[in-house]
Length: 421
Image 1 (cartoon, rainbow, N blue to C red):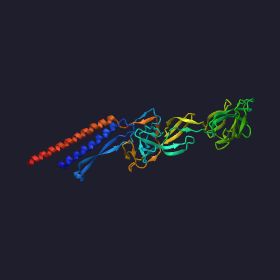
Image 2: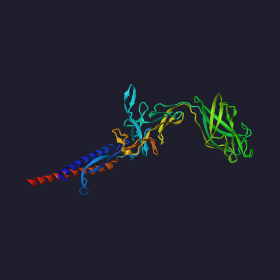
Image 3: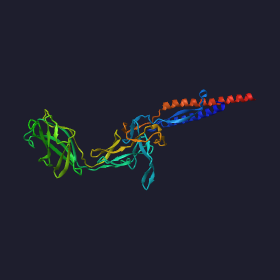
Image 4: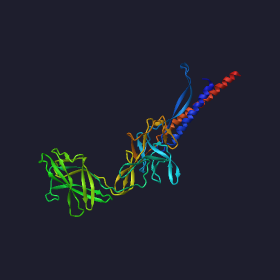
C-alpha cells in the first residue's frame, strides 16, 4: 500500500466512524421511544490485495446491524389497550393515508412493529403513537365467530340478549341420599339452582331437585335418578320431571345418558318455555358415597345473558381483546394480529418505528407461536444510554486516530518531496 492508498483508507475510516456515530446518536435520541430497536454498526474490511503473502488491509465500510431480537424492558401503563409482546413476534399494522368523504383510507401494505402503545381513535380503531393502526381479527361478541379481518375496531360495542340454550353442570349425587319424606317432590334432595335468560334477556330462576328412584342396592347394582324443576314463578311450587333418567353403575359412574349431555325439552317456567335446554355433564356427574347425603355441585354455568353495553376492555395473554359488559359478561371482541419471522434482523426499518418484509427476513408466519402478550403495558427501547456512551467514546477515538493517519501520511509525502528538491 502506498501513501495515497493510506490516505484513501483513512478517508474510508472517517466515513465509517461518522456512520457509526450517526447510529449511536439515533439510539441515544430514541432511548425513550416505545418499542424502539437500536441499530448497531458492523465494520467490514476491504482487502486491497488478495495474494496470501501480500495481504494488506484496505479501506473499511460500515453497515447497520439491527437488534430486533433483543427485547426492551416492559413497563405497566394505565391504558388497557396498551400491549407488549413477551418473546418473538411483531404487531401487524397499516398506515392511514387520508380521509375521503368522511371515511378514513389506509395503506394496503402491512408493516410490523413492537410499538404497542395502542389506544382508540375517534372511530374506535386502535392506533399507536407512531400512527400504526393495529390489524387482526374482529369477533362477534355473541357467538365468538370471526366477523372480519383487517383493522381492529372496538368503539361502542353492545352485547345482544341471548337465550339460555346450554347449562353446564358437574356434581356428585350421594349413593345414599338423606331425604325428607315431606319434601316436594317426595324423597328428594336439593339440586342446582341458577339464573337463566329468555330470548329478550329477562332472567328466570331455575330451581331443581334430585329424586333417586332406584338405589344402588337393587337392579343389579344400578341406581337411577330423576331431575325435577320448579315450573312455577309463584310461591306455590310445581315440580316437573325433566325427562331423561340418569343411571349409575355399581362403581358410581354415569351410564346413561351417554355422550356427556342430556336434552331437556320444553322446560316451561311461568309463561316462558325454553324449547330445548342442553344439560352439559361432560365435566362429570357421579354417584359416590357422601356422609352428608346431599348433592355436591362442582361446576354450574349457563350460556345466556341479558343485553349489555361495553364498560371496559382488557388484553389477554393469548392476544384476545376481551370486553366486560354492563350485564357482567366477559367475551372476546377481537384477536390481535401477530407475525413471526425466521430472520427478524433481516427486516427493513422505516421512519415510523415499523419494519417491512424483505427477502432476507422471509415470509411472515401468523400467530404467537409460544410468545405471550401483556396488556396495560408497553415495551420500551432496547437502547441503553450507558452502553451507547461507551461506544461513542470508542468511535470518537477511532475517528481521531484516522485523522492522525492522514496527517502522518501528509508529513511523509512532504518529506519525500523535500528529498526531490
